[in-house]
Image (cartoon, rainbow, N blue to C red; front, side):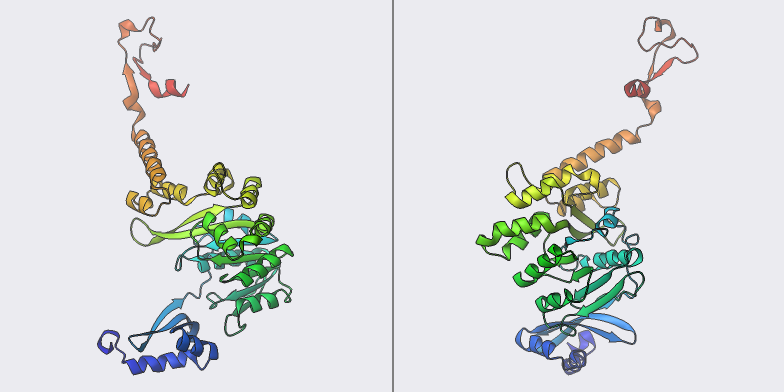
Length: 365
């Protein structure tokens, strides 16, 4: 371990002790769970830290946090994100696997809100990743373990701090979900993250926090409060690096009906999203096809990251056909007609200087 990392086991343990700094919660998690999460600042640089045990010794993973707040333009997020942040009350779920960029997307949304609205934003984070400076909005950023003992307790106290917008870093249990929905019902705008991969799984996860007897009541509460479900994944792009792929579902009559009654033969969240594409909603599969058409990702990437592989293959085939037609020069679609046969021909041209016909114009007409 010393040769590979440059540090001996004892030195790593000393660094871990410095980072933990005697915080009771972190010491307890490390002792009882074998790992703990926290943030650490050194010479102006901030890090997200995970300290864990392996082979009986301490190990540390540190990720440097950016000091620059991301923007919607910088992340190349679609225009519908500007509509999302105009919502005044309700709940928005931003979902995805660990490392899919949920915190970055939320930071960009709050940054836009900071520049456009006079609101009080209370954030509950584990840990704080981006520090927002006060512009038009006022920020109260609280870190789990340092500023509040648990997410339910932090969320309860946030409701007494005159918030307009509440960010819940992650909903992990029934109690937190219950309070978040109550906040949405009482006129607050709540942004929350979940470790789910699409809209359907997100709804099922929310319902799964509650008992079967409570399911119908929870469906009614979701139908009243849910504004958007934004799910995202990071996929490799052509030329190196990764790009964000979104699925976005909003709230309309069909969404609320499906929330109340559940998905069925003629009701699915995927069908609802596809039918509402004109409003900026999109499925993962449609986004993958569009990115392939735009030569941003490969065919292999589109298929590997798809939800319905057959549908994506069909979409890629159509994209290839369209691309093939566009590559054909109009001049190749000319029909040469002998001059002595012009009379009576449906493709004839009275001007002898044009012995050919543009079939493209005929098709267009």
